[in-house]
Image (cartoon, rainbow, N blue to C red; front, side):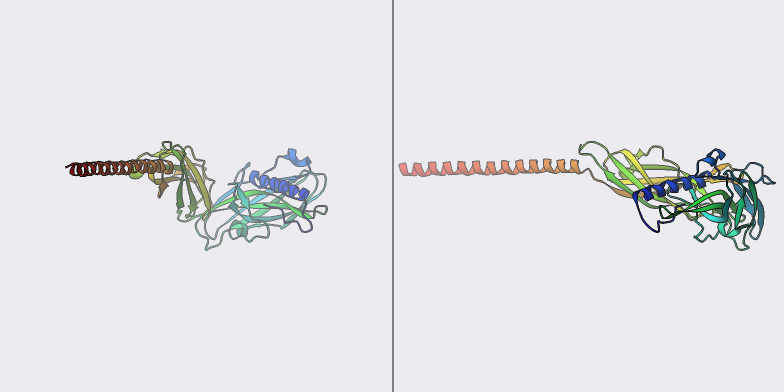
Length: 354
């Protein structure tokens, strides 16, 4: 969630203010609910929470399992903690995994095709008196042709404000996550793509170096997945294998999403040829919140780990030995030539003396 681009002027103070507001809005959507103690700080003046009903009394988010063509009805409660009436826009939006690894939601001007298109509140805006709260019912209507699998989005409240001094518009948003699993065949699947390995050696010809393994996780199935990761690097025939340390788990990836991974592997012997192996164990969370491990996925890529310093040293040694041999041969030839000349001179001298 980012503030709109300044429309009138760009100053250092405006850039700082934009960055601060972007951080505040990101935290608002990630946390989904704001502590009422923050209501008096001038930045956040309202909170959102799930309504108490047959789905539960104190939920951190909305979660449903619905058949294609089915519906679910629920409600969100919005409370105004300021001393002035508060007018908020209400809408739903699709979710996506941001570069920080946190769930983010599309802005109002972006088209949603899942949760954002299927969730409909009973109003587009709400006015809440100071110290009061409002219950906002909404309906989740799943199309008949909806593809089975997981969908994530959110239902949002939004306060748009203008800062004439800075020439910017700020859209403060608070929302609650909506997770939906459309019934049907669940096909969880993670793929490893674009696997590469690079090597950086040491100036010490006999020291080990570091390898860097990069790849992309791609959720090619229809379920939300995370994964345990393992990476190792080995020389020819699997010799001199080195494993990476603990690798941070990727965020939960929505169906179709990708996540780039970069893993350092230390203490790798320069075995000329390297084989990097990445192993993923996909993790699937069911409706009850329990996580199960799926069949591991593995991929291997090859690269070079040429010990250039050692190779240079070998070349120098070979050149020195070859040079010594050549020099020795030349000296031997010269000595033979001198001996032949001495004998020839001696014979000629003997002939003259006769």
